[in-house]
Length: 88
Image 1 (cartoon, rainbow, N blue to C red):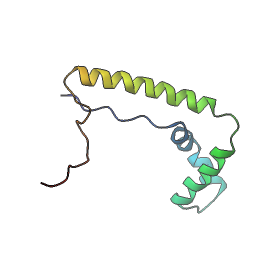
Image 2: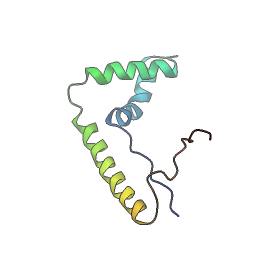
Image 3: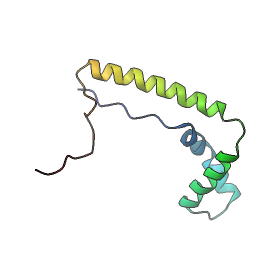
Image 4: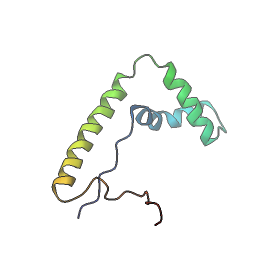
């Protein structure tokens, strides 16, 4: 059986992945946690996020199609879930 499709990245995460190197370059020695914090500040300050929202929407549409195919081919929504049920 095919593997369950991975959930798509959010608009913010797509942007952060593209901006990470620039943030590191502008802030030498910055820690990983600080990159995310700085990225959050920059993202909140952005006026036009439409490019990233469009990319995220396209990825979500593709994910939904893949999920429909996955479920049609015998996969269940719970397949591949890493959450474990409580012990008896």
